[in-house]
Image 1 (tube, rainbow, N blue to C red):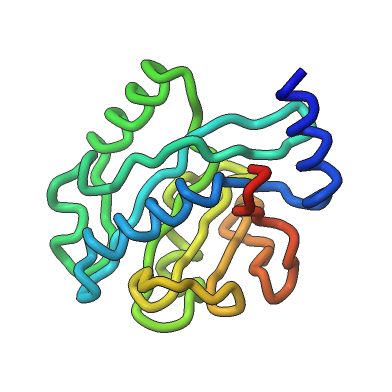
Image 2: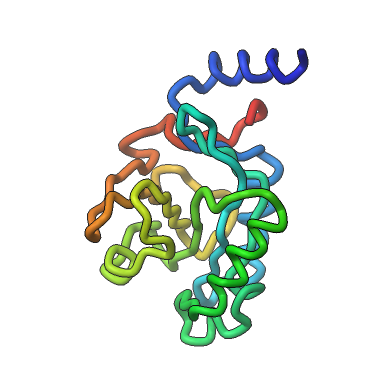
Length: 174
């Protein structure tokens, strides 16, 4: 019964969200990206969790790029090699979860660079990429972050908070 009450309140409080993350977990992920990047270079993670039958994605954890590939940040930007993806999929299978999004940092505003647009971390229709500004220095101002949904053929839909404020929910009822 507790779960149905939480689901009802969540649906009422954030009815349009497509992606959610508990507030404390989101803050921990952002802090960890800031720490791993040292405010000097990009850092990133795959956000893992589940997808509901309605298509809502719930983040329950993160697997950081440098856990999969120790040289992921060697060039200053996030680059993963093939073996990292094999490890990612094996980890997801073992944990019984899926990749619901990815997140990485940029030095200024969280916009999608040419490299981000042409090299999605997961090139599957519907995959979500989040780009955090200022190398993930807290607090993250929503109007400076980017959220993009991959539509295939290197096309993306912009769900950034400045365009779709209710898309990503990190409140208490996540």
